[in-house]
Image (cartoon, rainbow, N blue to C red; front, side):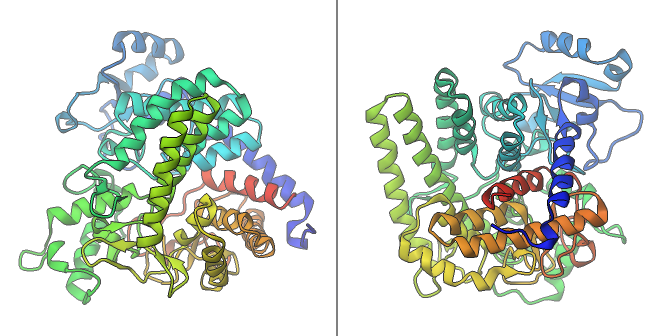
Length: 503
């Protein structure tokens, strides 16, 4: 395809060189343990050591010896190595969860490994031929399942009670396509299945529909939010939410479930919903009502599409390994899920995939870019894909794809756009033959990112796709308003979009 002046080869080369260099600065390994242990999201007294927790399944003294070889005595003094308690409730002091190999972090305030960021980071590492780092990225996630019970939102103790969108099987297959290492693939299967079952049994399963939901296990305010998401007046995110409930009428859900007006307090269910919204990766949007706290009562399009993909991936893995009976079982599971998605999440009238409210039995009329997931995954029929493609104008923006069609003051709504959702829309459109449309979206996003890179010499977490700008802070009212630099998934998506456009 021909490049526009804004996609001049020299500019593309400059961005590529920046990304190549950035993988190094975003990598954390044993040598960087002190750097990793530091967490700006929590209050920390200057003289106290940073805590690193080792899995109780590990040999803690042995790990300590390994770390002492990689780090100076001065660095070791600034840390305290502890064995993780077997009960999350027993953790009094939060810290970093040890991972044995190198991994890439998103960047900025996100100085740890994140569950779904890692998929888009992996795509970039593979494009950049960072083979060892790519393999280690996947291995650290498999390690998390084995040692911490699931893939965590991130490897901090305060994230032990929640996961993130399940993209592990796609990562395993993407890596396997490069390595063709069947022994490694076979060793991954039990952990993949363990992670799958995390999502398809209660409380993540809604038995009535057979579809899954996000559900975080922790109680009370999320520790990282209390300290790090404060505004100029020193109000936390939760203070601003209470202010909102006091000021505005909400008819999306029964506010009394989440806010005790008499005592001006958020309820336990609010905090459960708030943590769950963070498990979804979309923090924050009004997709499930203000602050998405009603998310517990929904089957989301994104999660169920990813579980369908996981079922298809496990069928493919068992095909490679020659387990024919198991192939059939996984295919049948995928078929059943596709039927349920059609029944509950496809809205014929709107021509979009929408999230389904369990209690009302209705879909929420909130247009969100996750409507492209079924196209990306390949579970939409040609007719459904055509309807979604015809609705592209709802989401198309000067800089790519709006996350939603509503401006709410949340970072996962308009006018903001994010690299992962852009890639998902582009690949979904391409998959069903809408190449002109997909190319156009990809080109818009790349032009915006490259122009902003020329200005600021950095790549960031999110963009205002209405004004094609990386300056977003003044428009974000809830959650954190900063725009983090780095940025892992933006790097990976840029490389994927350049490949999709043969640039």
